[in-house]
Image 1 (cartoon, each protein chain N blue to C red):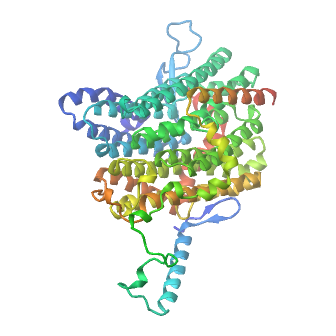
Image 2: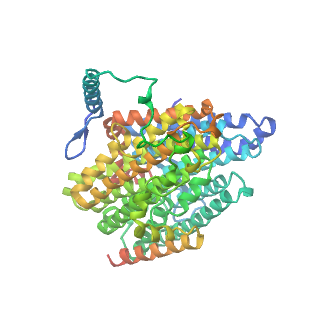
Image 3: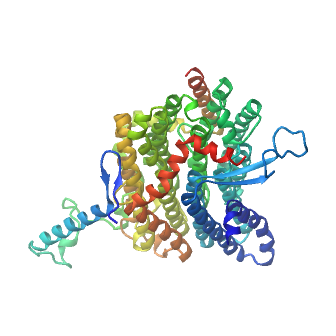
Length: 112
Length: 522
């Protein structure tokens, strides 16, 4: 029932993992509950702290998809520029890739 | 019952095929019933597939002959070979059949609410059933020309379904046209390769060719033609570009089935290199070609996904990336096929990881595309920049998305983790760098789905989505079933690997058994 999956180098059991997570989770919650209970629901504590600036509208504060990982893509501009250029959306290019790869595979298989 | 069970290989195909042509007639009487009829047929097909799977796993491969009963019977007399076609359903074939049956059934259930326009509904379900027939046929047939016919059935149905949303929209028609071109190229190349085999060996049966194959220069050409086009049909980089177009424009339940259809091409690729060529070819070279396809697909797929703003295009690039894992695992298994020590030490495990990932991917990617469809169904947009706060009003969809995202990112205890772990550990022994790349890709996958989760589901409830509600029950049902399968496979991967994956892997590796099963009955 514990279900050991042999991986060749060891084993994996999701059931043991789940039990471990539950035990650790219980310990974490137990320790947390031992702490000071100073949280007050309808007070200033629930408002976000934006370095002292006033909070904007809730709708306006949502970070859209284009802004997420902007730094990642900006830092890898050199990688992304040719990659995106490669995806032309032109069916002629799609066909060219098939032909090119087929030729390469033909050469490799042919000489091997 | 035993008659039905004995004829199950053909019934699984014949039922949806017959129903596909019956649906336009039923639609004349009552348009609303066509969806329920298609669901019913696919449910029966699923039931037969499960029964056949039990038979294949417990008894052994099933050979089903059409035409001449005996291999000596040639009509008209004087022909060299009899007129007959065979279905050969072994553990690998039925493994794929189970995926097809499950995905098609759930896709049809989801469509009950998702496809709202009564115009063209009969065509939609007819095409869905034909696509299912094509996939089943590709997976069950033991004949190369028959494979080509089913590949064409699946491709033609797919083209029409991709463009289903209407030519007036432009993009769906363009995506369908592009898929038609790449499918035509691949079909012609496959046909040419089949012609090479027929010219050389006078037979079309895979097992018969496998028993005679010499790996001549012509066989090399046939292999070099089949490898890239089947990899292209499965969405391997750099021939993957049709994937985001087709997957994003097709209706969500069709996208889920298209993922399974591309996996049927992947299955064909594996069938060719293992069951047809096996150690008669240079497995190291062929294995490395597949590994390179795999690594490129994994890395380029995921990095392209990160920059997408259209939720379905993003998921389509992830489908490319996940196909890379399958190619990597199976490629390593193929590369060491001629080395019995390496095969035993890690090759079989790599194959198990790659094959197990096919089923896992069909489940979680199917679920993710359905959640994307649910978002589109309620918000009318696929643009992530325009979404936000949808977890407030679509609680079930949010939970299903979390399950799918965690599974694709390889987080324990979901199913993606189990198959990826098998791939990481076995591939590491072959080449540590490949394994490290696979792990990095998993991290990037998680990052990408965190982006989707944040931009679509988190944040305050946006005023323009005040009216948004949870999707209808049939859509929730399909997503719930897939989620349950993902969790079950994740919690008990050993059961799946032992009873389904390992027999499938051995069916691929043991070429003698494959040829013996058919030639014994030819």
